[in-house]
Length: 374
Ligand SMILES: [Zn+2]
Image 1 (cartoon, helix red, strand yellow):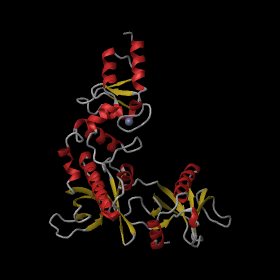
Image 2: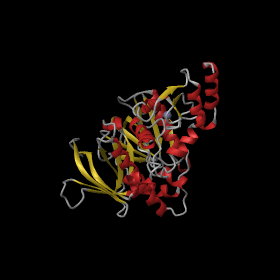
Image 3: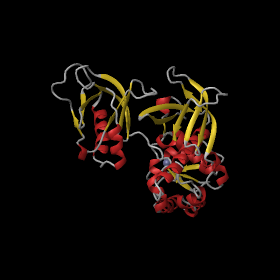
Image 4: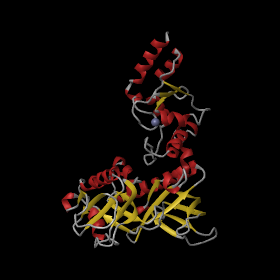
């Protein structure tokens, strides 16, 4: 067959519904293929396939293809690969998308094709056993130094614990699975495997920052935490489907970044703070890696008299960033200033998303308990 004819046949294979999105991250219109695995992937994933050359040999769909190569892809394709390499992915297991960090996407590809974790369920023991212990590098609360600490995740106890000394009998902290969240934050933590673990203690948010030098170990911890959350929620919400529970296992923050804020009297001047929008909780910190939030603002729904407006009241004086945001709550107005118009737009969109969403019954309890620190 002439190359042109071969590439036309390849185009037909590419328009098959299963091949319209990247086999690994779901990105539309994949333009690379793995000839050895028989999958179509996006360019970003094709670069990760290059890190496992003994498993995957990639080729651009724009190259010239041999008829035999096209035949391989026609016989296999993303559906067939999914049936083989994803046959036993646990419901709680995190499946990355194209916006996730490189480490998560690379480990997903390695778990599927290199370690064959989802073909042989005995390989899933690190995150399915309900118990996991090991050492992680944990950032010191005040000095910012990473020190090796022993962690234990126990589903039976419903907690993640860590110990300050290797022979200590009592844990330094007990983090209940119920309020635990974990999210990869490589840029903020300054490590490609940096994981932020957030939990509630006495209704205020506490952060710890950890990493493991081995990416597989870190992703195993992450999925072990998701498994523990899954099993906890299955008991807490009997009858709920996997589709309802899985989005609740871990949350990525809706937005993070610096803004300026004033106190409740609006006269003390604007101070620069790091803000994290975690669902309806807007938390602020002096430094992105602070253990505790300086304060938190609960953002309810429009039905409950929460509004977000661009700009600041005209009476506001003093020096501050140019792009203001006013959040009106039933109790008070919160004033923020953004450095750029793009930041202002992104923050307003994030606030608007939760304001437009009706409040769930349990969120009224959070609102009622909410203690705002000025
Ligand atoms: Zn991809």
